[in-house]
Length: 314
Ligand code: BJW
Image 1 (cartoon, rainbow, N blue to C red):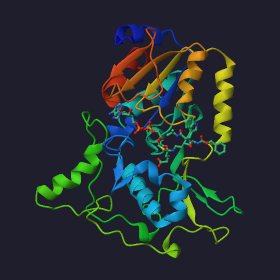
Image 2 (image 1 turned 90 degrees about the horizontal axis):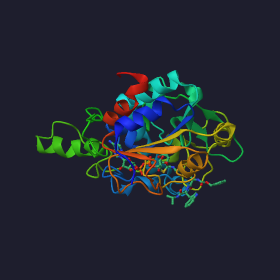
Image 3 (image 1 turned 135 degrees about the horizontal axis):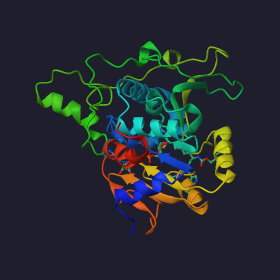
């Protein structure tokens, strides 16, 4: 049975040098962004993970782009929360702390997390790349919103609602219903099924400026695609350098591989594991032992608290 004692964790943290963190969507839930497998994980009637495939893009590039345009917009409107800042501060204070983030929302970067200590396993919403087999075009840090006029999100759009008791980010999607009940002052947005989605022709979707033939796509890693090799190599190198003291597993269901596999890899290099999650049954493959810790609750609240002994108040 894992410990829930913050004091013993704080003591161990103070003596830890090589620390790794695996981050998931739950980290950004209290910034108001929906998780994948929580209540906010439906976009219109689609399971978000079903849209995150090359096959979905191939079949319906307009639908998938509308989903990602919405996600880009939401991520730009959201603000990093205290957990993002706390992790960035730990990274500044400890150069032997590396973070593997599955998140594509850019919030860790906006909290000034040192970039050389932040490894993006699943890419970034704000990178776009060409889908043509023959073209290597890619563009990073494209924060244009909308990315093309046809993908504009209507005005008066409900913004992410930060909340420390927002368990899964579902508040963001619920806000539409609330607005409607309160008199419908806000416009519906394209995440609501009551808004008809007009099919968009291929020529109004983002086009590759280089080969002028391929469509651009979001620079994220979809199911069945390989994770960025260079990133995986850097992580492997770091892991093999020495033993690891501590593995932090924050706001992830630990169901998606190879990301989830890093927890056991770190353990096999000596790490004790500390999990922060809203939901004890949503920890996928992670099996905790009596040497580990489990902190149940909102990452936005708990992460700054459990790191305080090293980073001070955030
Ligand atoms: C809170 C909270 C709060 C909520 N505070 N906590 C081994 C075994 C089985 C299958 C495989 C395997 N190896 C590979 C596979 C296949 C597949 C896979 O893993 N499938 C499983 C689902 C079964 N993996 C892949 O396909 C990967 N590619 C690959 O393996 O390629 C091999 C290859 C090699 C060479 C050539 C070609 C191929 C790619 C995986 C890509 C995943 N992509 C996505 C979409 C990214 C783009 C986008 O954002 O749209 O990544 S899917 C989605 O899941 C996204 C996430 O990063 C990822 C993980 O989700 P996450 O972050 O854990 O979110 P949730 O919603 O699941 O969980 C949130 C958690 O937070 C919950 O626990 C809540 O309780 C908690 N929470 N509020 C604290 N306030």
